[in-house]
Image (cartoon, rainbow, N blue to C red; front, side, top):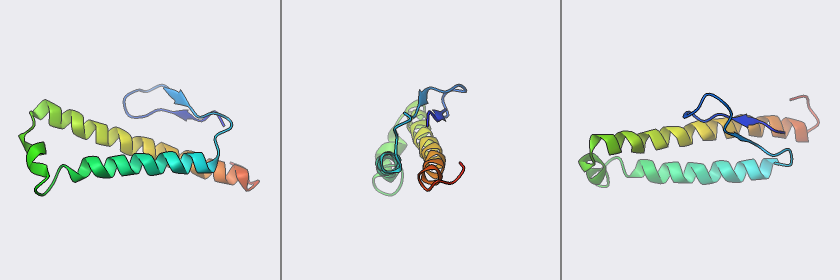
Length: 93
């Protein structure tokens, strides 16, 4: 597969998926990263958001940047998952 993953922090590939990566591994990684993103975002609103709002601006920026990067990774993993599912189904990617 050797799909390059870029993530928002760099313009060149930082990681490459192994050729042996299957759809289940991609799905598991996406699920884990989405659960992490959900937990991070849950701390930014409502009563839980009080601690977030008391953070220094630079910490809030970095916190939200981490959320942004996770969302970008999930998007790239989703694209790779579509390619892998087509490959596993015998369709052209």
